[in-house]
Every structure is written in structure tokens, then in C-alpha cells.
Image 1 (cartoon, rainbow, N blue to C red):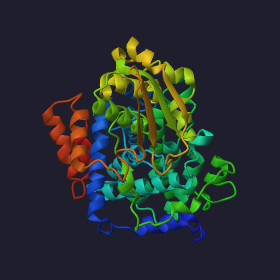
Image 2: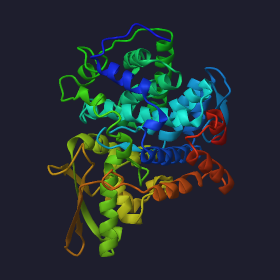
Image 3: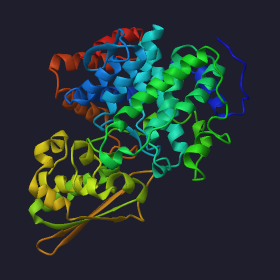
Length: 463
């Protein structure tokens, strides 16, 4: 299909030109290989999420809107392609254990992958096309997030929801064969669907879990409208009422980042896989607490007080409102609580999914230590380039111990290896299914990039 081409000077037009002409063989082998492992991490998390009740609620809500035949990750249910993408996004992101592009502050796979699976399946594409479209979706999501210069959180927007919608639109547009003008229009259209509020931080509500799935659904909707020659504003990024002008309201931004280095610099390679099932802003603190505990043979009982320093922008997310952070009500509050995570790591010597269960949340000794955590502003951290953490402990014997983690583990300067990602996958999917199913899924994911039909891959990843 073709529509009248928008001005080629627009950033969306530059992206459209690039995506339309890009081929699987244009992606370096190392990027494709890392992409497979990012997908492996995401699919394992989708399976693990089925052990909680939020996916069932999401499935029932979407089922109220209609039925379909599209497979769902880790579940036996079938939905319409767009609703399956929504639920898959909920499953990948629901535990907040999924990958993050650190400088963009954006969970990139949680929207790009669901959009790629649904769009590829409906197009009758193969997994070579699916993998390429996923990679392109990650690249655009990351760049849109980068354009916000770390400011989306500061004004109350979740960049995963904002940026993910654009990446998903590009993913779906590529798989459905839109030309450069069509992919440009899809970006312009999805700009009117791109949002996600951080108000969930105030009461621990579940809207964040929905954000990447809704972004995937919105991207598919925008691409479908563009396919039918619906027009979208070409200057959706840089325009007077474009994304950055409206969402950031005079704060620093860099719209040019959206198209910068396409095909030359691979943002997918900078995407961090999480070692802990908590907000990425807290990872450096968990590592610091566990390192001090191990190095000095400490227990939680040895600690009189804890002093943390964090940049004020991530601090808003993991330290405010104070009532929720110093006395988390549930596991979702807890994973966004800097005081709770540090206290729990010091008490238990680890932080995994078990540390978000009720027995951990209700432990009186952990609660007492959580209340002794003090947080101040960090003037030496690397945010938004990295999520730094500074931790100082005052011990009962009068000693003071400190540690700074300037670059969080998982960052592209300290990446988890593919073997470490595979081990994480085994641990997450292993919480809900048997080894035979895990091996079936692992084989399907690591085989992405050949002539296998995308529907066959989607079926292999059902529960």
C-alpha cells in the first residue's frame, strides 16, 4: 500500500525510510543472538507470572471484550491478536523482572515482543521476520526513551508506556508490509495513544503492569489504521505539539535521538537484563547490601542504621510516598521500595521472588530495620546513564561500612552473559512448569530467525 509521503525532514519519516528498507541480513549476528536471549528472558518471565493472580484477571477482562484464536505466552487461553498482545505484555512485565534499556529508562521487550508475535502470526510471517521486527521495535522504543533525557519519570509518565507504543507501531508496520510512508503514519497515529501515568506509585495499584501490553496493542492499532491510509502527523516527535513538547513541558529533551545512529549503533546491545525482581533503580543498592554483608560476615542484627544516597528522579519512584516505601503493603509496593529491599537483603542475604512473599513482607525484624533506613540525595551518581547506589551501614560495634555501586549490574558496561540469562530463564519458568516444557520453549526461542512459521513459535510458547 502507498499513501502520500510526508516531508522527509521529519524524524518519523527518517525512521520510516530506515525500517521499510531494512532486512534481516542487515542486522549483525551478535545483535540477533543477543536478541534471542532477551526474548528467552521475557518468555520465561511470562510463564512465571502465571503463578500470580493478576494474569487471570487480565485474561478475564480481555475475554469480556471478545474471543479469538491467537496463542498466549505461558497460558492455555486464546484471544484476538491484539488482546493477546495486551495480555502478553502484562505477563512479561507483570513481575517487574524484565529487561530495561538503562539510559532510556524503558522496558523495551515487554511491548516490542508481544507486538512482534501477534503481528507476525496474523501476517503469516516466519520467525526470521518476527525477530527482525522485534529488534527494530526495541531500537525505536529505546531511542524514543533516550529522547526524553530521563525526564519522563520526573513529570509522572512511565517511559515504557510512552516509548513502547512507538516501537510497537514500527514492529507491526514492518511485519504487515507497510512502506516508508505507512510506517511514518503509524508513528504519527500512535502518538495520540502514547501515555502511561505513574500514579500507581501512590497506592500500589496495577496500572503499570498493563502499560507495555497497552503500548503493544496501541502500536498494532496505529499500524492497522496506517495500512488503510489514515493520516498521522509527520512531526509527531519534534513538532510544536509533538511528543516531547507536550509530555515534557519545557524540560530537557533530545528529539533527534529518535533517528540517531539507526543501523550503526545497536541500542539492543545496551539493554540490561535484571538480576533482581525489583525496580531497576534499586539494583545497585541490593548489590551493595549483599556485598557488604558477605565481605564482613554481617547479619541484619548487626546493623543499627542504614544510609542510602540516590538521584532525586529515581528517588521519587522508590522512596515516595514515604508511607508506602517504609511500610510496603504488598509485593508490588515492596519491589518499588528502596528501604525494604535494602533491609531485606541485609536480613536474608539474598533477594529473589521469595523475598516478595507474605512471610518476608510481614517479618517484624525486617520491618524494624526498614524503618531505620535513611535516604538522601546523591550528587555523585551516574543517572540516567546508569542507576547508581551508595550505601553506608552503622553497626552495633561502632563501625561504619560503605559501598558505592556506580554502574548497576546488568548495565551494558556490566552485562549479564547469555549463560546467566539462560540460568535466569531456567529459574523463572521452573517455578510454574516442568523441565520438558521449559526445554520446548527454550528450543523454540533460541531457534528464532529461520523459516519456521511465527504461529508455530507462538504455539510452542503456550502454557
